[in-house]
Image (cartoon, rainbow, N blue to C red; front, side):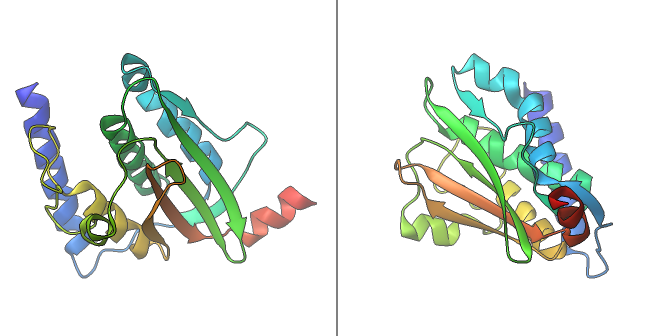
Length: 185
């Protein structure tokens, strides 16, 4: 366990160095946020099951074509879904939804945890911010790195209060309008 924790810290520091490099530019791909969500949920499914958390993913017929680097988008989603599993009590649900609005494709991860106060929501994306938590294995870099990656890909990462008291993290990326046209037609 200690070895995994140390490896995670080293990976976070390497990612931190990458996203803070002035020359960092992700390699844009045509991706489907719904497919990315299903893949990330598949990777984290066992962890969710161990805590009796149900992961609700977009259906197989849902699509949200976007422009972003697949590997980096998956990294963001693993962080968001992993956090939702970590901070949500057992016997609850983590819901992953996707959609298109104007020129943006979005993906939302909504949990049934304690949620965030407005003050916490303002701080949650800061470097090394852990909101006073300790002992959970986090470095306080995941959300900082995730937001930097989202913005480097022309999108953003935001947090809102969920209607159920939990938190709702929303990743937005530029919509892939060419793919949308072929899906609609």
